[in-house]
Image (cartoon, rainbow, N blue to C red; front, side):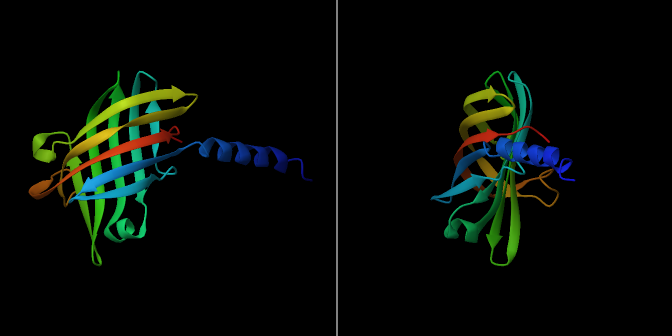
Length: 167
């Protein structure tokens, strides 16, 4: 009666063990203040190989003050030969009861976002990557397709994460 449950329990325990390795932190310096974020492992992932990777990082705010001011921070980029391409970032800013979504991308008219990978390695199916990012963020009404930089917010930050593969 319990034998069919054993493989299922084993699979669940192995999935949990694999996910336990995913972790990381991000810092965001914005408006003269530094804020910490923790990797949201269930939403973050990577795909590809050691020579080319597509990276998606989602992070939740740490600390009461940061949670009161910001929501989710995201970074996305391609990593090839230690160089990054197609950088994207978004940040939810909380203005009272209003959520304002800020975006930045690589082109100058989209915020001039740069993401630098200082180190990266693949071990098994996990990618470890650390680096820094900077640019300007602006409001977008269409999920970053058009970014209004008329009231841009300058930002810099760092990241150090271990990501699991796309599932």
